[in-house]
Length: 336
Image (cartoon, rainbow, N blue to C red; front, side):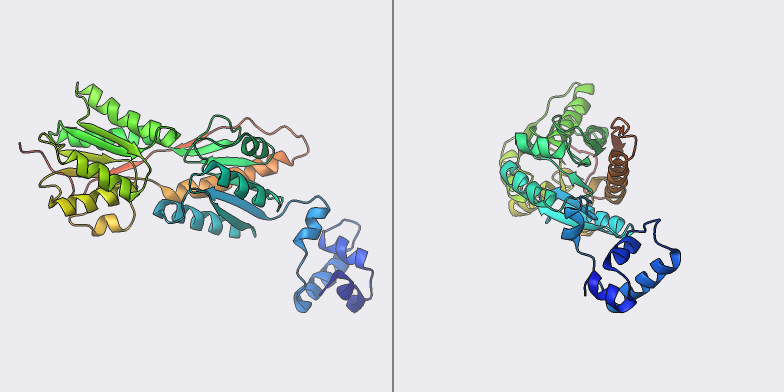
């Protein structure tokens, strides 16, 4: 079904049909109604490629994340997709696996659709072309912030989240605390580690151990196995992600150690299985759905400003969310 088909049915020109669908003031309300009724009855679907050839942006928003298997990013994607659907818009999802070359390839593909904007969790070292491309489209950085991007950011107060987790263990009498987190090449990695160190510094303590690397379960399994093999092993473990928490618990099970009897553990994020683990996992809960919905709102506002008549959008203002410490059975006072 084409515009010409609709024009023949209504006995009007295809130009009139096109203008009616574009809500042109030159077309009467009666004609617009006739055209819209015909479109619905005949099943006409507008051509997105044709709209883009006329210079219009699509109803697509790109979402670029490092890992869709991670519960956090899966929830983010679902929430953003639902938020966009309420505006009759669609989500185009891309996964980078934290690879800057793949990030660039995925971004190029998204930009071919002339998206309304892009929400991105940037890699640690984005390519210069990636930066240049994003600086020319409405962009919101999500969770992570890279200084080379000019777009707004919707983030979590990671420093405060891990500081509160560490302070909780200190209040329980633990003095040998270890941290397993992501690489400090990322803003999230730097901020979470700083929160851990600052809490210990306030009590005049040094870390028992620190392990930084890929936020994958296998990294945490290896790190925790090494940490718990020493004589004065940590009595408390703080983690920088849910994936790291999973790997750590697997390692403790393999070693025959129980929580909180042998070691107290505090996770980060709060996937459903945290409540199901033995006694529940004490964790830093993140307002994931609010973060994702806010990122969508900020992006759509930014896109509207970029296409406004004055051409002078407001200066970017970042939005920061506070995490919440949820106490469960994986932590207990230290009895040495």
